Image (cartoon, rainbow, N blue to C red; front, side, top):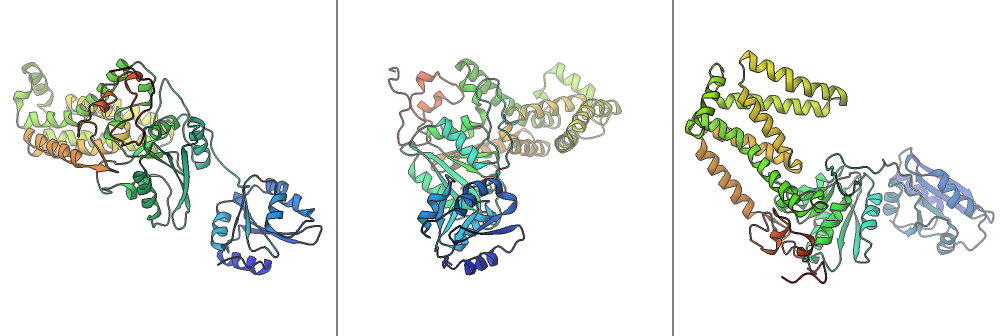
Length: 481
């Protein structure tokens, strides 16, 4: 329904749409007798700014009663018009007041929203010793400004979409025109527009709708809380999504290799970055497979242990009342309980709980003969190894448990078959025209320069072929190969 130009009737229609008590109406008359009405949400509107920029200038308004002339007298730099009452009500709920006056068939939306935000700080989930320390916050406008400050390019496109029938959450689609593949951009926007859900509290809700396999155990959408990483991925040709109300940004297409890389890798010498990437991969492999192979070796293949190690383990487990697999599951269960409790309990209590669980509970369990020392050492090292790649902790913790169960029932052959199945699944998974295991499957030689082994900047003068950029040159006058 559109605005009729009759002030009282339009206000009644708006009140029918927005009957809540915190939706206020402020009526005032100009010096020439023109009736105005401001409709706004009380907690979300800066009333002092509204009075300075709108009410005070219009109290002395003596011009023509047209929308264009009234807009010129409003001192706010953010002002636009809307005809539909539904769209005006959405703006009011978002915190932007709407100005109506007699005879106007359009409402004027004024940008005097009150913004409650926390300060920009380094995200706790991605800490780097070298490099930028800024992190995204929960306000999408501030997040887009952080992106604009790093990508001062006229080709940067930021398009806002509203997702959620009741939340009307703003989602900013960010990409570089002429670099990002247009078909990927269109697919992302189409999937966002097709989302039909009441409420979007966080960007993680969008990953279900944006993924080609929404029920997959593996993640298919990249995530980051740092503007420098977000901008670097956009510069490679990816499409980024900033969601209002959350500091976690999304990027597509996503490669599994991304989670083994760190922003610090690009601010240290290449040999150091290569070494740390190898350490992360090795730590994750050991963390997943070490408990499983330990159980399989005890139950089915004792020859896997060297003789001296075998004698040491045999002495440690001889009085344990549980089977190897049950013992390992028990220790793993205790570890997961301590982890969940330490995260969700008050900060200082959680620190004390971690110390008690690690020292007192573990040592007492060993002395009482419930678990063996090797089991605690293996699970502790496995837990530390998983956090070497924190972005995959949800997936890898489940895979570790599955491998442990298979090892306890089938043995090493079951571990090998399960690993082959996982590898097959990784090889056949793709999202937004990009294979998940690229550049290893399919093998793309040039993109291997920034995979496990990192080359110097002069050798990375082409954007990754894996992403499928329209313009692959990112460093001119590159050295000859």
